[in-house]
Length: 301
Image 1 (spheres, rainbow, N blue to C red):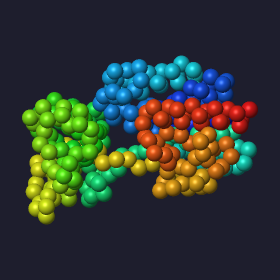
Image 2: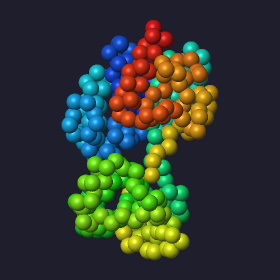
Image 3: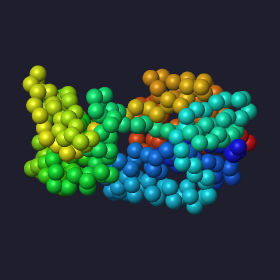
Image 4: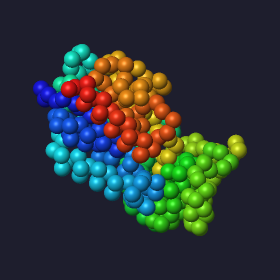
C-alpha cells in the first residue's frame, strides 16, 4: 500500500495550490485526479479577472499551474476516489484500483456540471451533449447547436460557438440573462446567436445514438429545434459522494470547514469549490488551498 504524508483529492486550482505548498514544506504528497489537471477551469474560454493576466485561456492557466506541481515532483495518481476512511492517526483513500494510506487528506474535488435530468441525457453525453464548448465545439463546425443557461459561462460559450457553428440557440428559463453587461454586449454583435427567453428544454431527441434535436417549452408552447450539439451551463454541484464513510460534515453536499480549512475530522481539510462559502472564484480557491496546506503542515509536523 502506498503511504504519503498528505493526499490531495482533486487537481483544480485549490488542489494544485495545496500540493505546491505542501511539497515546498518537504512533505511527501500525492494528488488524485479523475479528469484533466485544472478541473472546470479547463472549460473557461477566457479568464479576465485573474491578477497578472489581462486575459488567459482556462486550459493555459491550468497547464501552467500543473507544470509547477510536476516540477516539484508531486506524485500524480489518475483515478476516481470512491471513499475516504478515518482511522485516527491515518486515513485510507480508496480509488477504483488501489488503496492509499496517508497522515492527512485535503479534499479539493470541486464541483461537477449540473445536468438537466432528462431522458436520453446520460447516454448522449459525448454524442452531441457536452459541458465544455471550448473542448468540443470544433466537432460541430458549420452545424447548429444549443447552449442551455443564462450566466457568464453560457453566454461566453454561445459567443465562442458562434465563430464555429452555423447557428447557436441560447436557451434561458428567465426573461433576462444573468451574465454581466460586458459579456451580453459582446453577444449582441453575433448575428447567428438566437436567444430563447422563458424557455426550458423539455425533450432530448436521439437518432442512431446521437443527438438529433431538442424540444423546448416556451409559455406552454412546445417547439422543436434541430441541433447537432447541446452544451449545458446551468451551474455545478459539489463532488462529494465519496465522503459517505468519512464522517466529514456536509451541508447540501458541500463540505463544512472553519477559517483554517479544517473539517470536523482531525487531519482532514477541504478547500476550493467543494466547501460551503459565499464566493466561488479561482482566486478564492487558491487562497483556500494555501490555508489548507498550511494547516495540514502544522498538524502533520
